[in-house]
Length: 107
Image (cartoon, rainbow, N blue to C red; front, side, top):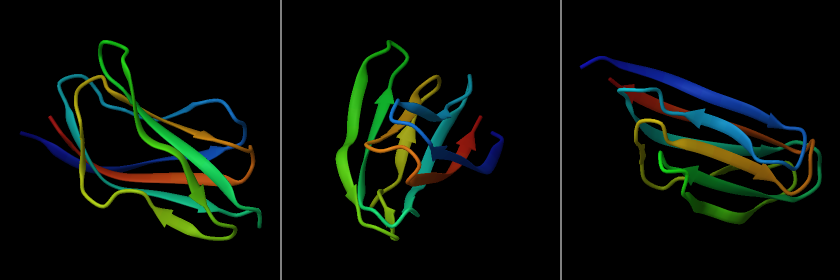
């Protein structure tokens, strides 16, 4: 079994859902961290969802508050993401939030 540590990152410039990470085929991912940084000086909120291979959407964090000029760790435990599943993030206001996920891919 091959493994690789990687990160996925996005700058949320708008208010539409943005794909943070999609698990490749024949792979399982273990997300160990999702950091959200607010860098504009204004508080904001973030929504994080997981879409499975059948296109069902599951809410992981719904309108999670991020204070001005802070970084928030969203996960308290690792999150397993199966093949073809998608993690999406949405900011309430564009141009305020950056998101970085650290994960281990197993294939």
